[in-house]
Image (cartoon, rainbow over the protein chains, first blue to last red):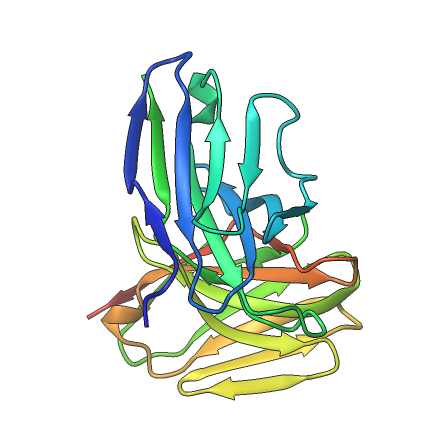
Length: 116
Length: 112
């Protein structure tokens, strides 16, 4: 019973390139969340998706960042034209079908993005 | 201070001792969750306490919630070296979705 799977674990990009981060939720989970963690900081919410729908993207920068969760396949967090400030650990979490909002979120091991 | 702010920021104890970590928050919440993070890894869910609950136990963990003071505590009893990690509290507010708001975390070191 695999947990949340993220890949790659480490990603190195040069300034101006694109970064694609993938997340496969736990089996049976239809809710996906993306968070960003800077060194020595807690996690900051970025976006919340259900299958084929973005529910809340209030934490996502307006430019260069996008996320999707297609009907088939993993959720993708895409960062275009990366800059040094994008260097961080990006975590994906998934949870079961919403029921009174009392479902724990289960996290992957994250993707550590480094921008040269 | 920010939503889900923990204290102390760092805690060092001897194996076998109890560790108490506190968390304060600002807004109304639906639930509060505690997570553990080992270095270089993702977060592991420890325990969830609903806003209408006051105390919850899970193994060596005891969590309390005081909604009047907007605070929570996590107690780890009989600590082990393997408990060394960062601990985060996270709140799910009463808004439209269940996104979590995290504090900066507490670094717990348990000396063998």
